[in-house]
Length: 393
Image (cartoon, rainbow, N blue to C red):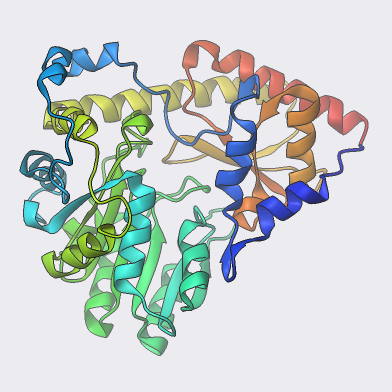
């Protein structure tokens, strides 16, 4: 199988942006290829809503014409921060929320607010990889906590032991986890919360997939640990099908959140007033429930389709998820999954994500949140292409 990856692409994925800051492999891989692939199975969120569909959730589009396109509230309007506060069941007030341009900015600003050079931190792995890259740039001492197959569960006992040993400044967790699709139980969250209180470690949770759990609702880390010991990062891109709004947030203790706000003064200053207006309505409790169920329904439907396709003769070993809109799978016939993914794109115009972008060679991440009307055709194309590649391997 001739599927060599050009050196130029390898450097663009795994080199450095500036000294000490690694290239963000996952984002660059997608940015380079997603606009031209005919079969797009790289997304980790659910199929986005159209502007017209927003009216079904109470958004009066006619009112947008009367909005002044100014800066608005740099921390986020009282309305949207109040709605976000309600998501956490009273665990945090509106004053403990800052609205950001997507959860990516929320991750950036929360990390820069919580960690300084030389700090010891624990990091959930595999991960979305934004946090590990930024920690390297900042100069923190990062200790990985690897989720391992076949369960891919968060290594709770290892985390507790390392917290007692090192008393780290922070523990960064991506849960529900991208790319493994696993999620910590409330009991696990409670154990982590108790130890964080004992040793003084701040729990920083990327919860952008919170609400996508397929089998049962689950509380946020803020509801379990309280704002004194935790920060929650989330947004509307993945579960709510609104990535184009670029609305994210950080929620937690007011003092920490105000530091996040101060860092944000150096980045984007303010969220879009148009996006904030729409988000403040979308985040009404009834809409939150509807959109979470929309996401779960799409993923459940697509997973059943994928199971049916693989039953015909699979060429991947899937790890069926309990949350998220993606599936992690092992490629049993090749450990060079960057080359496999590159060949899929170049020869078949199919885009999935190589495990190398998660420091997991031998694995791929496949989206499960795409439009159910076309998902079956997409996964058939993927599996048929993989079968042809196996034959020539």
